[in-house]
Image (cartoon, rainbow, N blue to C red; front, side, top):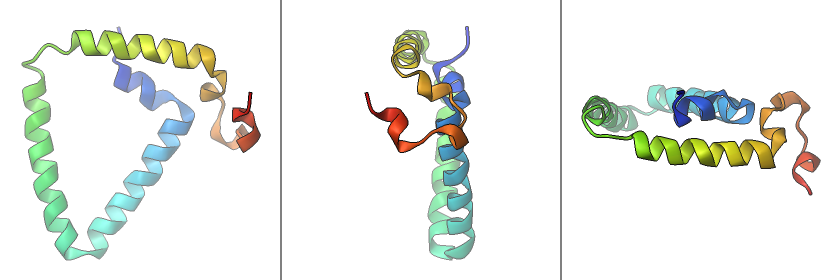
Length: 93
């Protein structure tokens, strides 16, 4: 079974948003030395938390998130539409 996070990242709009945020994050880190230090500390702490998360059972949360994604994908099929084909009016009912 695929994780909810992996499924979410495959949605075109989410993928595009994550890509843009990643570029913004890297540019900001490179442009501002004070923020770079803060970001590096946060990244280090996040990697420690991520490695520890394997110890705790997350299957229940993943199941709930997957069911929620199933509902979202059924209710809003536009989520699978490539971003260049989506317009503001696609979201109106």
